[in-house]
Image (cartoon, rainbow, N blue to C red; front, side):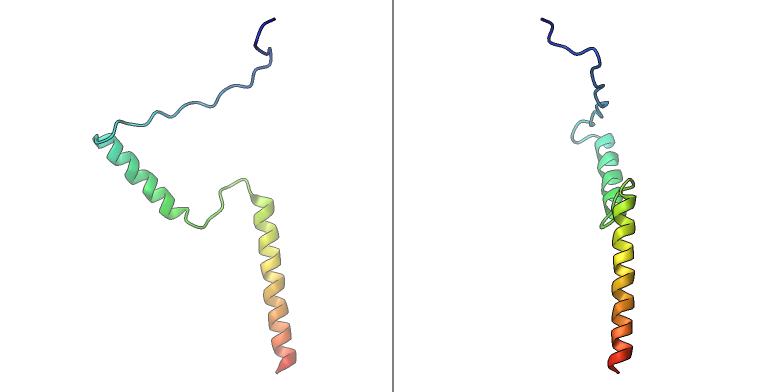
Length: 73
């Protein structure tokens, strides 16, 4: 028996990292840290449904707070 599948799932390409202490490594770390700062607290693309649900819930919550504030005053 062969230990492989005919429809084998392709592997993801490997991203080789530069050696530590090289200028390429410094540039890579700077780029990644900038990306991390820009993406802080943000969801990555592809989560559109979840973003829309959270947005709708936030709008409903704010409207409910405003309506209750108007009726209480």
